[in-house]
Length: 357
Image (tube, rainbow, N blue to C red):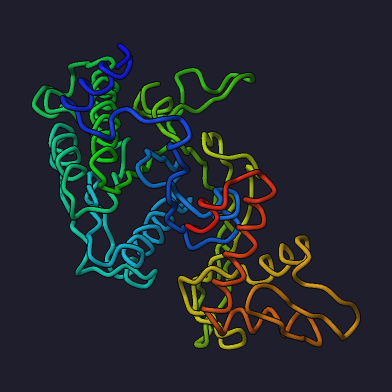
């Protein structure tokens, strides 16, 4: 027996069989769909499991919306497990979350009255095998006990960043430990922008992200979300928001190449013409255009055909195909998966990864 083999056996005996493995055995993680086609396409299926991810944005940008969609899909993907929300801000809104598909009975809300509580409970929940996803809302709201107990006149330079750094390091270590014991769980951080001191200068980035550099280095996925609200009138003639135009920028992706920007529309009120309900993402037209890019949607004039595994359908016009995708969720999901698979193949992903999308 070689010295390497002796060392490997000793390490595995002490720390577990999965601690040391061949590089060939390290595979792409499973993904949780975000429920947004353009974002899933860019991430090759959605947010990765057993990784730290972060969504950053200004107020009303759509951070909670994305987290709710992710929570709903984690619940569908792992029906026997629960999702944990660390409600650090104390602003969870159950009505909108349920409209976005969240099963409130399978969601554990932890109202954190201090940053230290968020760190300890978050780390404990990651180590709980019944948990599939832990969401921290938000990093910017984490407040150390010393800051809470002291006078408003006292200054605590870097105290929050150190606490967040401890939070991130503990969670990263816990994810490795859980992965080695076969527990699939993921972490999503929500964060907000803050203006830098002197940020009014005409050069450089005027905004900063709370939490220090540890947070930015430890996350596998980082993205910025933006929102433009569109106003109109409802059936009673009352002013309302009809839909949101969201745009995202993926600023860090350690898992795959591909697009780093995208857009999507979320309906905010029921639309009788399309059949879309408030809280639904209207991206069927975008999905169809991507199917055309990959040669699945072909034809011309009034003779178009949508053909991929298990489907061979004819449509006179694109509007008919779009409406069919809106009305049939299974049809939509199958085409969405096939398009993402085609993108993964073009990026050189393995067949094993393709099968898990």
